[in-house]
Image (tube, rainbow over all chains, first blue to last red; front, side, top):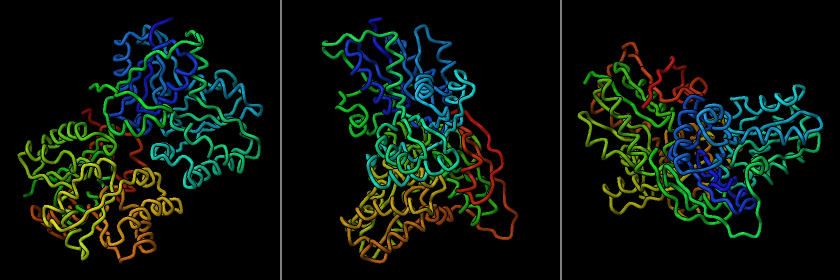
Length: 265
Length: 265
């Protein structure tokens, strides 16, 4: 396909997926929608998340995209079946790519998933992993402090380390054989170094960290051309609320973002 | 008046205000609305907050309340004029009571306000304080980690102390003469002990902590009867999303909450 890629997220964290896509598929233009007026989805019920996700999908489909990527793990975990059912173009969620990559990486077949409350409560990663391998064991750990930490720009502080230590100590105490850890939220790559450090200190086994943004780009490769040497195709960005754009967007995208357009959904 | 009190909040934190009202005005029934589907307001723009707040007010007015209390500091800071303009009953916001109490408590007339990004960015406390006393100096400090800390139930941990220390050290380094600190968010009373401890360690002057929930109840006294010895009038609770009610509500209310009713606004 040569049409644009539509990327949907509850907020701006999905720009970590855009960053990956732009690097690997520069020929494809990208249309991003961040539902920043309603962020975060992670604390909302499945029903509410589905309602908002469908409204956002409808908007992106009107922008003539040929592939939809649901960067938001919470939306993927709770709304993907409904989104797939009502989309004429392929829809890639965040959960399945991360789940398959984790399963391929794990020797012990004991996999931990870090995510928002909504993602963990949905059991979506566990379902996706065990659909492939019933013998695999999946443990979820909700880490509600990680998103505000990443947004505050404190991803590399001692405080981030203390918080990661609190969550992961509890995790490894209960599940010492975990050897693979999925970063099941778009914000968590900003805490990757701290999480890796705590894993080294606390995990009995060496732990492989799987980033769901990178795993999504792997899966998108089936639909996209990776033509190199081209100029970068445009990125168009829509948000439902303009708050903190200038401060947050570059943290996730890795570069400045041109002024986003406001939409009322 | 003898009608019900309507209490509006972006989420469940406003139950700290309900707790105060029930203690002081037991004869008045309370109708609470938490816009839990859209919480938090603190990261959203003024325009979006105003839009949601007016929709919530409309709902509460239909419940036949005789007094409206806007427990949410962000909504008070950004939407109060619009709410007052479209309400037939008195509306008490969170900002003015906290501001007046702080001004009365301060000797140095250098007052710090802790709040969400939205509250601090609005400058509402500063405006309310300086309307009374132009010579007063107000400094705002956004503390985005405090809400998730309170919701995680980590209000008394070393991590909460380290985070409070990071925010308040910066505050007192820049403003050594602050002698009064307003807890400008419904969640912050759950961190009060830790904040008080850090103030003792870091503030050059003794610091008075002002809780805006208590200040609101003081202002409501002008409209309500404090008849004692009565049985507790009913509390009816509405939410726009049911997520985490059972876990969070008792933390703020100080007792279990009967099953809330869902409304789609």
